[in-house]
Image (tube, rainbow, N blue to C red):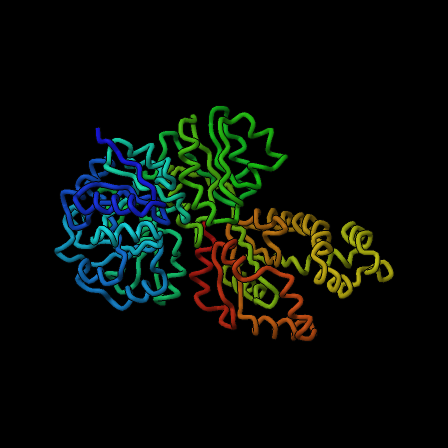
Length: 536
């Protein structure tokens, strides 16, 4: 039993002590932006071997080397290709690991006999300071017992590693929350071996193309050796059995709400805190909220803590995030925690398409419809139809906004002017219109074998919770303004006011599974995109 030192990342002397422990061949857990890493001198084979002993890690599971300056690549790799430098410029420091052919300076203990090694330049300032002071690259897998959920807090590391390693350096909670994306760049086309915060689409934007290895979604074949950490069939797993429910959030919620007494539930905030679900969740042993259904960044930060907090239950029922784009990393971890034990809860794909005015989202929805043969639900057209019908929605609007009453009909221009200039008025209008449009969308889904929902306020209306995938469409500001002015016959001042009342592009990057820029090249890579969106 080792006497583990607990060090503070707020104290420069204790950071230096952590570096000294590593420089003399010891083990120290350090914070990174992804998860806490269990570090050793990457050039010291004996030190690296201690990592496998402390974690109980299989000997065929290679390690990632962490650096604090780009020049170290030339000691670790036989070749530093141009594509590596492009990715480094785009994503380093940050949660991206690149795999290339290694030099002889990298010991076998790091690569587990492979001729390649993965390298990353972490963003976390404490990690970089430790590497700098130790004056050596550090081999550092996650600082947990092998197979358990990865550690994203000091408490997680202490639970697993106290008495097994020389020191733990505290640096707060990890702000990304899942391990780095691992991309193999030994071939002509970048191949993702482990998804994470840097998505396939982001890598393809830089290099022109990228693809995800089949083992990411299907697991390794019998006898196949992992080429990256995290490729084992069951990994990141608590002792309790995990079952995933995949599909549209409203559909998966119905399944997790049926968890038996003694089980634990990991679900989205809309259901964890929803009054209508409270009584159904009261019988389970634990409810761990994962964040809003669209918030992939929060899912990543919460997943491992949620799995750990639910461990000990008879079973863990999990609402699975959407398994593409920004959600791919979180879903990969959950799939492996569950041993790929999942239930599909939505029978046919429901693809939500959303974006600001002038982004051309309806055009993209139309192209997807032609590509997939799915009908399109046009929320704007449905809204206009309901207004013209003079039904219950119209009555409520006229009651709330009497000044827009034009002989029993709604003066849409007058209404638009009011809500674009008054946030409270906009919220009042949406409280009336959203439930009506959502009801129509639900009916459309029930009558379709796969469909596309073209909805400007997809998440705000709650319609996003009916979708198995969400595509965000954005465009440059000048492009949007021109489209709005031509389409609606309004001047630039009114067009700018309309855009100012809507969410910015960051909202779509944060809340959609995949986001595309449409400045007039809407059909680019559409077939590949369509196939991704129909994965449930």
